[in-house]
Image (cartoon, one colour):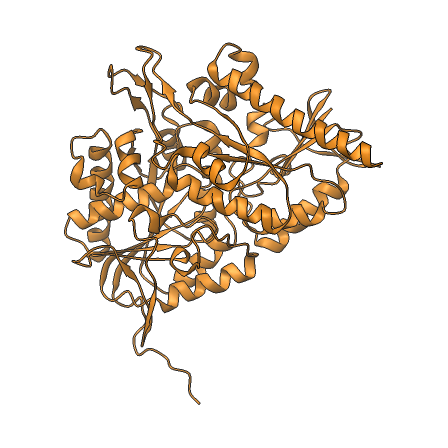
Amino acid sequence: QVALLDIDICGPSIPKMMGLEGEQVHQSGSGWSPVYVEENLGVMSVGFLLSSPDDAVIWRGPKKNGLIKQFLRDVDWGEIDYLIVDTPPGTSDEHLSIVQYLSATHIDGAVIITTPQEVSLQDVRKEINFCHKVKLPIIGVVENMSGFICPKCKNESQIFPPTTGGAEKMCQNLNVSLLGKVPLDPQIGKSCDKGQSFLSEAPESPATLSYRSIIQRIQEYCDQQHFQEEKII
Amino acid sequence: LFSFLPERSNLAGVRHILLVLSGKGGVGKSTISTELALSLRHAGKKVGILDVDLCGPTIPCMFRVQDSDVHQCDSGWVPVFVDQDKSISLMSIGFLLEKPDDAVVWRGPKKNALIKQFVADVAWGDLDFLIVDTPPGTSDEHISTVEALRPYKLLGAILVTTPQAVSVGDVRRELTFCKKTGLRVLGIVENMSGFVCPHCSECTNIFSKGGGEELAKHAGVPFLGCVPLDPQLSQSLEEGRDFIQEFPKSSAFPALAHIAQQILDGASQRSS
């Protein structure tokens, strides 16, 4: 049972990617109902609260924080195995607030996404620092857009060259796990745009294999944590 | 005691100010800002870049000056010059950090205060263009920057998107932000638009194609052009080289040069 919470208030992309554009949030006695993709996958995003695709959410920090609080407090998720929180880039209000509001409960950790270039890694090092500062455990780093295989000649190109060793080197230096590398596949963007599951549409793609391996490692990490907690109890 | 007020505003010598915006992260705003600055320099212009992405300041790295310090003068902070002939100057929080990996974990009000300072207190001198590079979104940084720049010669905003619908979806909201804040939209750039395989020349639309152009048409704003994915461009940026100078034969060059030309045309129209 999975819940996906989109706290990118200014750029809520999750509804579109999940094929839920145009859906609205319903209220009931027990709170806001998430929008379900499948019986076991519920989604919440500010995207569902906007009436037009052109509507902009031009809010300063405090108002964004208020909505995030509401999302956590008022959404009736039911019993869930995983709550995944998608965040905007940065180390600001949304990030501080989500960690703060969830501090009473247990956050398993953060998965940090980067692309291979130094320009991206530079910002990701800051994100890693942020996690250390707020005592958020890091499950690991994913190197996205890691290489492209030409569909015609099958040669590989590094479109975002890892001039400083990519995520691999950074993870070694900072003692953080590299969960995996996901290559570029034009089908990923297409599936997201159509709101369909890339994993189902392209089961044989090297990117799918990467995703699955990364997800497995995340599950193993969470299971281990859970096991350790139970031992303590 | 009197507080010192500069006789002349620090932006008085700046002829045109343009904002580079996007609703979406990772579309290449900072790359476009950097390449635009280099193109305008090649056209003989003096350019400044103000980096208001406080959490993810990438501009210093793109010019290989991330280790530079910022000094003060009578009228405020001296921007960092990229080279000997002082044709490109920069200001970024990146220069104010003790260590490059230090995270700026600030909420809105603190970010707003620094942005106000960045707009008022950098002694740019005389510039033809000041490019303001922003983080993705429509929040504190954007509201504060537009408010602070309102009294000055704001030429308008360039919006960057990648071709896919998911990116365009967020950039539509950025267009609304421009409308609501009275910010003129100079045009839309469709970045990462196609990749030509260096081995066999086959063009693959990795991030789809056409979304930026369609959005421009739909919103009634100029379409400035498609910039293809070019690993040479990425590499060049990483190594702090002048892509415009070194790769005039690259597939991205004509697109970038064309964008710069349209900005120059727009600016001279505005001036006259």
